[in-house]
Length: 305
Ligand code: GLN
Image 1 (cartoon, rainbow, N blue to C red):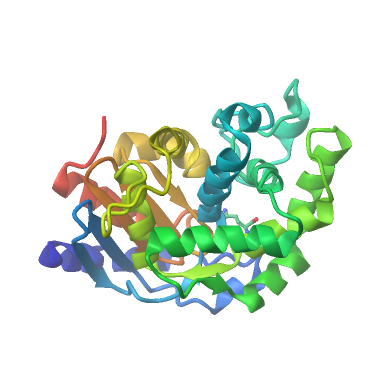
Image 2 (image 1 turned 90 degrees about the vertical axis):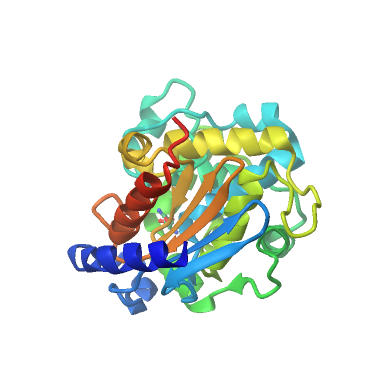
């Protein structure tokens, strides 16, 4: 496995040159666009890695998976899906058009910005700090790593340049679908996107989802099985934004990307996969990361379809 991963990283590193860092969050421009790394954990807890697997980056949209899980834990699935749908949009992750075009005004799904702003608003807690702590504590458990924290520099950068996310949130407030203090909800959203981790952390979180919510390293159940199923289904249909259909056809694994360059993938009952490659394609997915996971899926026959 180590040889295979090294070869795949070497073969796909060159694609970083064809992508771009996410410039709309200026702090993300500090990354090296040529980095590429992968980490894999199997359901017995065995770990494999290659390339720049230990570089830190911010979780960005992959935090949407966490806020969905916590929103369901706190409210039950019915109440969550009264507030956010589960349909792919075919639009970019920060698109506004669907919010106005839909009959209900509900965001289309929890994996786009509007939907994640909604699920973050549904996490219980007396203030932003308490809610953020729940997100961090959850991540510490599923990554088996206590060193998970917010990158202040990226957070401030997101907050300063987050006009589009403010527009989405205030629009939902104006139509009555989003409840609560909009600035506080946005603050939580910016902070959760700025949580820093590495490919190993994503791989471990991925294997917990693959293992129906049981931590492979100690057998403890931390996410209900039905919640894992919901989350993996939504990752397949919506996780790679408006490239989700193509990803399902070419790779066939539930996955979620973020503009920090991360991809988390979860192969049911087999593997969790974490990838880092910060150069992005025009849809905001890691350009070399996509090639790498496609090759891996072909080599190991990982498609669930
Ligand atoms: N923080 C980013 C944003 O809100 C997350 C988007 C992403 O990773 N696609 O725009």
